[in-house]
Length: 257
Image 1 (cartoon, helix red, strand yellow):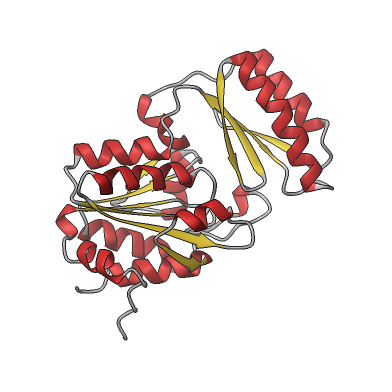
Image 2 (cartoon, helix red, strand yellow):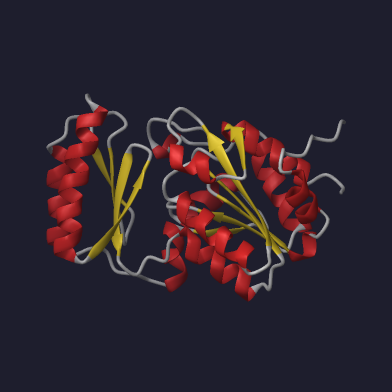
């Protein structure tokens, strides 16, 4: 089998691949390891991704899936794996976090019901309003964002916008960037790669910029689709075509240096 070609930023890529014991690989899931689908329960990892991620976890210092999903969902989708999962933007690492107060849940449900095609996903400590199936996604986005912005202010909570979804979360939610900073510190990493496709991944890119300033070798990978935010593409070191492009990068990382 031929060796996959390294990405365009070959110097950083080669440095990471030549130092697996000091490198962390951090990955988003939806839109990065799986294709975007109408509802989250329909998502599946791209063919071969589960085995590839497990293989990388055996080679590198750490491999982590950093996601807004519940960690249990990712573990079920990937099956037995040495990869770590940081669910709900790292909130799961704080232990059991209570759900939002009943009045907040009621207001979010009321908001979701007021937008045709929108629906609310209850994720324990967070609430996500999806509008991919809304009759008018642009109008739905504006109405949901405005409603949740006011509700977040009233309830002292934080918002995490994504592709056709806005999530209401506890204000103490770490975010993807903080997960990466903590792992780099705790594991004493010398290098890190992050691949993502959405607005929440900007925090992870910012964390890699900070780590680069501290002397680490870093590589920011954007999985570009028609829905990928332009600012994420602009901030990336390399841009690949969707999840299939991310898989090609990961396959190259799994190949001998």
